[in-house]
Image (cartoon, rainbow, N blue to C red; front, side, top):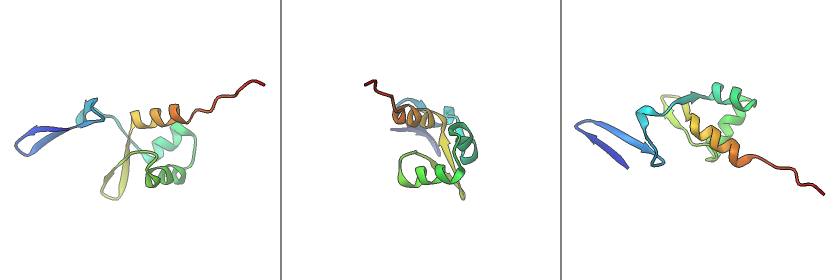
Length: 80
């Protein structure tokens, strides 16, 4: 849902917060948080597993999306 007036628009991300309140991370920052290579982050973005926006030639990933991806990817160990 997009809300705004004139030429300025505020876009809601996943119905939660306006886009101007979302903290974005660079690919390098995401790689550091996840402790993986930047190439792994690029693969996640290009495959659609990690949402991102393109700014010029680089990507920015919402911080919340990184945390959600990690939560959903958690693998528990089952006892025998």
